[in-house]
Image (cartoon, rainbow, N blue to C red; front, side, top):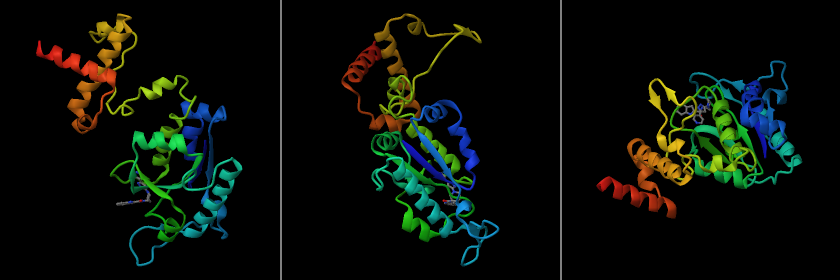
Length: 255
Ligand code: 9WO
């Protein structure tokens, strides 16, 4: 999958290009992440990419011209990487609190259907509206809060999509078993040593009985979701197996 990020701080993206599972995906050429600096598309000596806002007010606004040239170059590069250049397969995405809130379901859809994405990262007070209306296909938000820039949300978006691509996590099931994928929160995890701070590992996890372990983990997910995210619990639709476990849990609770 191809990613182009348009940002005045390209160095920030070393975080996902060089470390962890995303860094391995890049080094194994499963993923391409190109950083495009709009300052490279300026024509003045100061490499100006921002100006005072019309109508007055605090701060600066990012100018449309350099960003439009950067997006056009990103589109060319995406097509050279084999992306089908339309908003269904390679959208221009602006990271903004005004956007659609990212969810695991939308991440899974992006990983399945996109050839690539061109991600626009704002700074200052924002970007000239004419650039947004002319070039942006969708705005994506991580939640109702404002940051100093779109770069961290862009990295979150890329990280979440990369980990859902085939053959990235090594054991694809570890991605499929993620919480949220089945609509529940995650179960607790334990590893060595067997005892820590006077607390032992739940015996079922040491039993080697995979069916019992799977049922215990599901029960933990249910309890956590019911207590911490009743909204998710209300929306949860159990699989056939999960419905059987829920029936057994309800029966055990009555004893
Ligand atoms: C600033 C702002 C302030 C009050 C209410 C809404 C607001 N939106 C923005 C905005 O879009 N700012 C631009 C992008 C420029 C400044 C840095 N930007 C940004 C993106 N801050 N926070 C985000 C963001 C992106 C995705 N999910 C959450 C926050």
